Length: 204
Image (cartoon, rainbow, N blue to C red):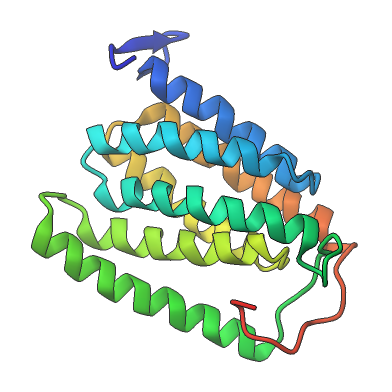
């Protein structure tokens, strides 16, 4: 699954990266449709992408996939039962929730950047840490069906395109370019179904 293949003569990839690509696209497509089966595909794509990122020495992203798998089980439960035992509805963050999201992103960036510089041989510790922390925030917001998750994913996915081009993961760079467009579509699709802001921090 690690041998290099040429995809339509445009990009070099591996069968494992290609499988991960397809699973990830299905995940986001189902997220846009608010279909809870998205979480199953999220678990599968995280498992396969964890192996891909290990090979590329993107250790922050590799570890992130493990966290995504754990959070996906929680998110799956939240979507089905997170509203006092009933299906969770789309809602927006209040001002306090937005502040806590920003603080969590910055704090995660600081801790992860320090860890990656000190304990790994990655050549992109700051970029890896910043995008890993942002992805964790985005995943937490998605798990609670907060519409702001799409804002976070738009920012993160745009920056990931550049990172994956730098690392030679061209198919994954194309995937994240698609994610930008899909995140914009998700934002528009969710906007009309949002509830009133909750008086709670992001992690409720």
